[in-house]
Length: 419
Image (cartoon, rainbow, N blue to C red; front, side, top):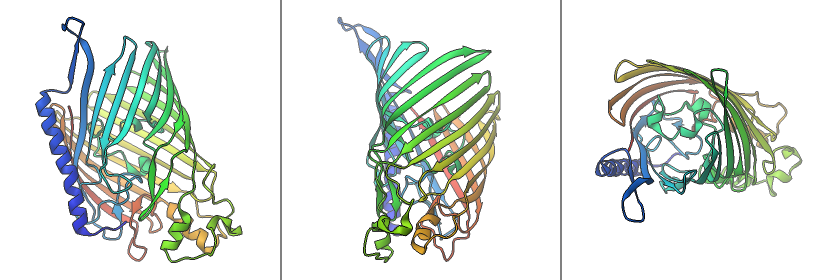
């Protein structure tokens, strides 16, 4: 969605203020965490409550007026040819509360650029965790989604080698958390550790559907799990997740905004057969491999997304990323690819208009460097060269069909911190 430049400037100042405020909080705390506890006599004991935080102050701009770059599809608009801080800037605060030797409560609040173009703080985590043993844990409450490897930490810029996780791979994920439960177990195997996790819950979120329109994902059911094996510097993960959508997207409102008046609901048309999303499923499968030893870090990921509905094209994506630490500086290079299945033939004009918005056919070449110049602080500079077809519109926003050629170069600066 294109917005006025003055509005973008006003919006971009807010995350800057949030991050500066959080930095002040971190300095006041005097360290990475604040923890305290006392026994019945007021004597110090092990920490019962700890406070932590993370954030990013980011600036991003592209070189194309015909599309806007976003880090994922939960953002309603993004960066064009003007420097923009909404794409990556965010602030997160987390409290860990020890309730017993084996029980802990965790609450996390994050302020970032939302689907409704606000920075309204959202409760991303709020769960109780109980360890039945050192190897088996149960969590109940609001949990972060783990569709893909490294996906649970994708908002914590400091934990990521790059400015942001590759949008070709992670950008289509609009589910950030669920209200539900998960259970995990870890067992020794050969020279490493095998971990298994299962999760299930409901989505409480909304996501942008079209300029000015939100798709209410409330009530969508999410379930899945993964197997993760770690041995020395190697980590391998196989993941599978499934979503059953609870509500239809606002298709009729979109068509009306485009001046298309069908005289009755779109899904009631014979030509709309198979286009319903409510009660339909989408599956997300992925494989991930990470090697991290000494100065070398290498990541390799592939995924596949399948839809029961014809409204969205099936797709596949992958990326390779490598970084090499040279003291405090880590240069890195990467390449990612996102490709949807071909558009079905024989679609009527209205259905075709709806389905073409899920086309992706692009690759991105990434070059950047990370400078860990101080404890818990890192500065990153990155260039992404997106090269795709003019029809590749799914992972960007505000495309101009008369000028978008599928190519964009994106420049990014980010200051990441934890406290």
